[in-house]
Amino acid sequence: ASIDTKSGDVAFEAAVKNFAFSNAKIQEHFNGAQWLNSDTYPSFTFTGKIEKMKAVDFTKDGEYKVKVSGNLKVKDISQELKTDGLVKVSGGKVSVSALFSIKLEDYKITGSQMIEVFGRKRLVTDLRPDDFEKLRKELTKGYGKKRRGHGHTTLTNDIGRARAFFNYAGPNG
Image 1 (tube, rainbow, N blue to C red):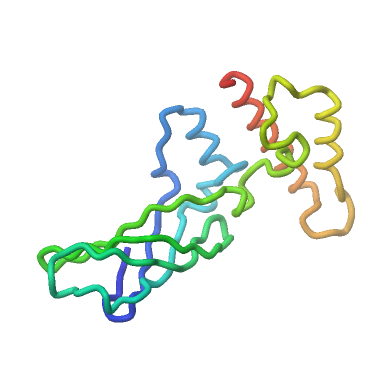
Image 2 (cartoon, one colour):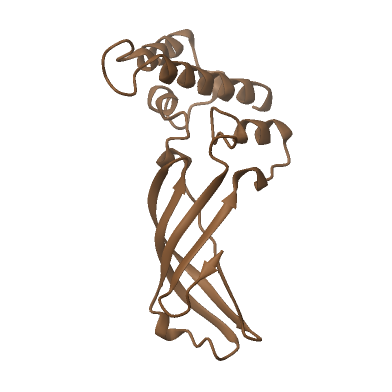
């Protein structure tokens, strides 16, 4: 992590494999090729700026509430992010922290097609064969056409995501 106390530029990198889950299966899926693919994309990166840097006195110990804005990059997709942060100065050392949530679908890491077909609040136990027929049609829409993003690899990945979702959802309710 870095901070430029003159310009307010901040940056950090977070290793994807450092995200921990109590359920080993979730950990496996999270890092797997169908979700975050941590072998290919080992880290998230953030580059941004602390707004109104003049409000922070780097010569005086204390905690300073700030606004941070920048870009969070996950799997080669950058999204703008704005959040509250805290700059802490203690004994000449500076640390910056912020809490924020992201939607995996903003980084194309969800079964968004499943959500579109099945609905956001449907229970797995309520799904019927015709629902899966609709999903099949949605997944294969455009397959085989000379359109970017609709080739064999995309279809295989979409099917793999659906399979991973149902393999987890079935035994875990």
